[in-house]
Every structure is written in C-alpha cells, then in structure tokens.
Amino acid sequence: MVVKHVFCFDVPAEKMGNFINWCAETSKPFFEKYPEVRSYDVYQTIAGKPTFIKEVVYNDMKAFCSMQGKLGAPEVQKVLGEFFSFVVNLETKLIIEIV
Image (cartoon, rainbow, N blue to C red; front, side, top):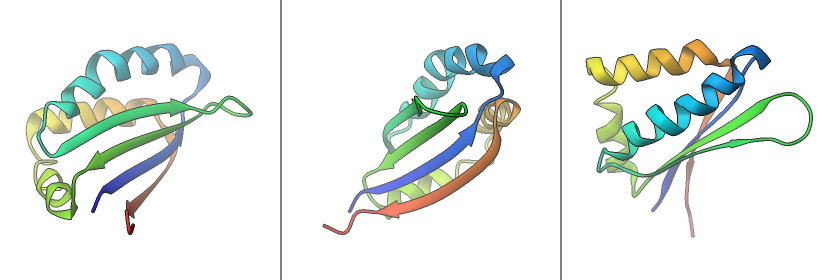
C-alpha cells in the first residue's frame, strides 16, 4: 500500500529561481537518502500563478510514520526551515493507494 504525502503551495516570483535550485541541489537529494522515502518530486504548474506540487512517496504507512518520527532531528529541521522560507499558501494531503 503506497502512501503519498502531497503538498500544494505557491512560491513568490522573486524566490522562484532560488527555490528551484534548492529543490534540485538540497531538498530532493536530502530526503531521498532516507530509506523510508521511495521518491521525492516537485512539479510546477504551467498555467496561472506560480503554484508547485511536491509529492513524497513511501512504500507503506509504517515507512511514513517512521519518517515522521525523524522530523525533529536538527538536520531535518534545517531543511524544513529552508522549505518554509520559500513557500506560501501551503496545503497538504496524505493519500493512500487502495488498489
């Protein structure tokens, strides 16, 4: 049963270039080093405001919960703080594959 944690958010235009570089160079490699994370992808919508979708995929709920337990670690907090310095209008959803 695959679990996806989906984030939808905006990035102000003046931060967009730095955010895209940060995703590729810092965030994606950082989170994909954890065995709980199957994949970590960020997408930009192509119409309208500068909205992004981030999708973190876990093999199952156990892996998701294990990763949630690591969110308080200083190195994770640093990367999360950087993420929050870029984003506004954040919404998240947890999605579980049923078939």
